[in-house]
Image 1 (tube, rainbow, N blue to C red):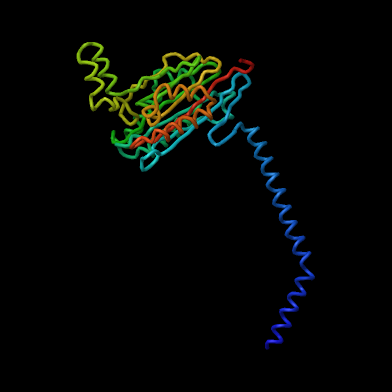
Image 2: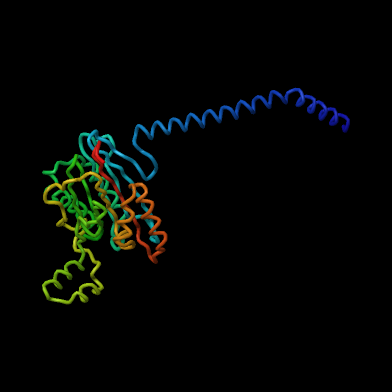
Length: 310
């Protein structure tokens, strides 16, 4: 038995000696095939990025022949249990003829189904695109959508929203709640919309002399929303006429998880970089702050450049 086993082993070793170059050749062919596959895949990805405009997961661009829009975004859960922010922007293919739409929602964590409401609203707004400036007048589209949410949740669920719509060198915006829209122009930052919070109403009363500024600022109910998507009717803050877009304008849509954590100056400094870099700087700033109970945070940042402009 031992002799038979020894003969079997000797035969196996002899077979391996005869076939080893075949095995080595097969292995070399497999390695060569994998290298070729990887190189081809990388080239295809480069071509796809060049054709589709995507340069990274949080960066893309659109070019309609007259204007170029560079886009960046970031999003994080913070220290919350789930992500209740939602955002989207219109497809690249629509930019040339239909314009560019960006929308951001911040689901209300204290009410029911904040995540599902914000995601559905973003989807509904994008699905309805494109819009005309006439249809957007007076913010009636948002009032209708808010009423639809109210029919389902009866005021027990809601979200904020901020929208920008760019068509060539004109821009329209609308917002409900406390999500922000900022403009960086000539290195100066401007808040384009007004937060619909009780605190702003208190400040108006302070301006009329009814209460002191300290009473307005220190009121515990100051952050409470006076308008939100999910009410039976809403009164959006909106641009009455289309806004004139200038070359190299930078716009930032963000939830309060960013604007309540970072200062105006920190946001301004971030917006002075390319949109993709801006998004990274904003997120890094939030991580550095390490704020207790950090809210969900989301940002869409885009810059507009006239083709041939400086």
